Image 1 (cartoon, rainbow, N blue to C red):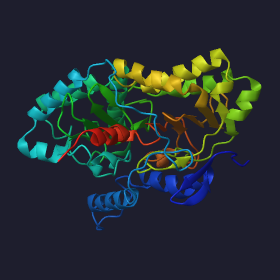
Image 2 (cartoon, rainbow, N blue to C red; image 1 turned 180 degrees about the vertical axis):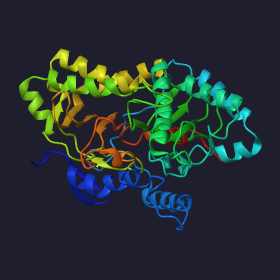
Image 3 (tube, rainbow, N blue to C red; image 1 turned 90 degrees about the vertical axis):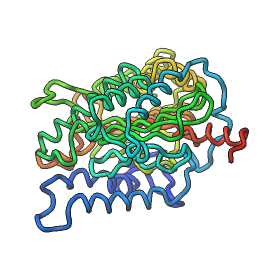
Image 4 (tube, helix red, strand yellow; image 1 turned 120 degrees about the horizontal axis):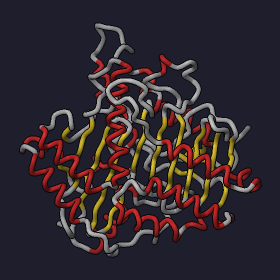
Length: 417
């Protein structure tokens, strides 16, 4: 069955979503399936050197075009994001960032701090092989690690912090399962700081690692926390050091509940394809400028109970940021509710695998059951997506990922040498 109304324009070319996923996105995801520690024969170029080259290649291709932002038709819609006071203080995250930076040695700070407009913002990737900048939890002292978690605690809600920590723990589970502690593990996550923490000038920070990416931009009392990536393989630890940890089950189950709550006609509009055999996320690493048409069921046609359920689902993702700024973002989402779409690919049974997308001018959320990657050799069929490998992405379309539209407006109104 073809996928209607879901065409995507990339780099001047026209692809349907299936074509783009196969040619572009899946080529990004497949390394995770083959680059485990036993993937290469001995006496070849070291894996670390291979990873450095691969990382450089992804950056060169991914950053070849200047940042524009995710759009529905190739044109950025203006006037969606303005500089204003939210009334929600950012003092706690600023203080936490200053405390973290003060805990580092001068050499570590030199590796960790970048200019606020530096392209380092765009250099993130959820794959384990990616060579990252900044200072890692692996090399931090106990006090430095405490300061780093203090920064995350100030920036995230309690739920968002728990999700992030559990992703890190499950990366340790993956290291146990694959016997790869060189490139996988709980502490292989990096922090960089863009700009100098300030009450008035723009700044921010990034957490970057396997299946956990947080971009947190601050201007005054405004915050943009996208791109945000959360995922894991496995999503539930059935053995090992962190046996019992399980993540992204609400995102999974409430997405299905959303589909099933729609009336028959709206559900039919939402389902773009009832079968899912591959990976579908379109806005992962180095996809800052992808063009994605609105598709699926339009929320303007939803009943009030359906709208509320949709907003509650959005809040499940937005609510990973600190509570006050999550409320600010949800108000922004609500103002565009009639221009919001809900799309679905996959089955609708209790054990189905699926992809869903929530898309408006101010937010884009993707949830995807992925094919096995690092655990492919344990799968019955590595070509079939599984509920034990999940990717979730949150984006701010129309040029405000990384707070770039706010930064642009700030520079327009403030002269900088």
